[in-house]
Amino acid sequence: MNKPFLQRYNKVILLLVLIAVDLCVFLLFGILLMGYDDHYDSTKGEYWSLASMNRNEKIIYISYQVWIVLNFVGGGYLLWRVLRRGKNV
Image (tube, rainbow, N blue to C red):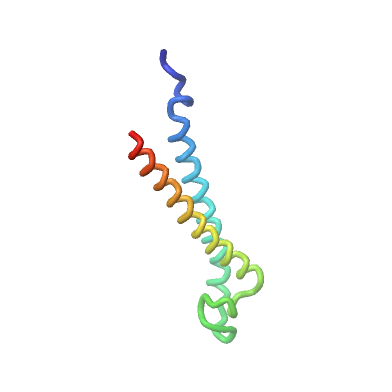
């Protein structure tokens, strides 16, 4: 008996949705950090240093860095799952 399309490919669809959401979050961070790039003042500190950023830019920048770490952790977890599944087959 054939399974419905969504039931057969639900993991693939979920992975594609997660990748799309991840890219949208990176796009959002990139757009928000453009404000720092436009209004950078060299008298406040070195370029991309926290000293040269206002409070909102610091929050966005730190959130961006946390998002990168979460991506590495998530990617490592997915890699671990794939490798573990390969050993069990």
